[in-house]
Length: 290
Image 1 (tube, one colour):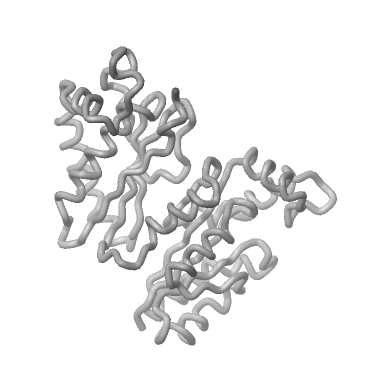
Image 2 (image 1 turned 90 degrees about the horizontal axis):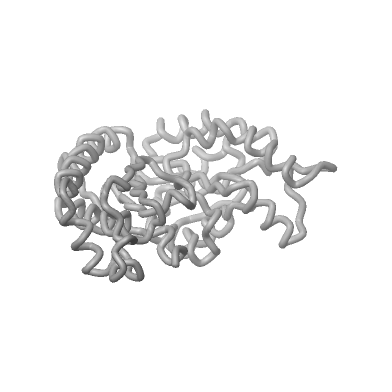
């Protein structure tokens, strides 16, 4: 049988419910807190009429949660494409969220919130390593998380591989949901040019300055070639979503300009190994640096 199932899992408080609601709005058939052992049966039951299924599976399943790996193998055996989406956030962000809602962590018991988070991280370590899509919601509000899910899973795209080209600032930390990370701090920083400092990599003057810097065109061509070489393997592994992170110091000038240009180049190339690629530039830290 054909069809696709997305398993939504991750840390409590990281935004699993928001992800599930957004995917339901996008037309996916969503089931919450399903025991993993029933995953293949669900696909067979509703797959014929509802080819896109999203299932939330997490530590609320207690002892059933450990069956996820074998359940995913069963789904593959019946011919259904399956992906694991893991929603994560920093411990600090999770503590703030639980404290703001005044709700205990599901594994907290009589201990502190941080103890419950530590137990959950340990229990989810293997599942996190299996994730096809990893989303870090630490710096995202509900609307930004919804937008990210819509960009990844909107149904009107015919692309075989969707690529988020994510600019970021190293001073704010490397994105945990990046599949590949590239450092563009070798490029002269427009921050030190007074007339360019208040602008961003989205402005023509900054973009022109960055892209005309010596070796940048060669860097872009080689990075695109490297990605396209790797993309063949990603297709073979069934990957449908990738995040390419491009970093500079503050995520305002160089990484933004490079992410925009790389996204444009990937879209212009159209396909790799007869597979369609769709790239979108996203700027995580734009606006954070004054």
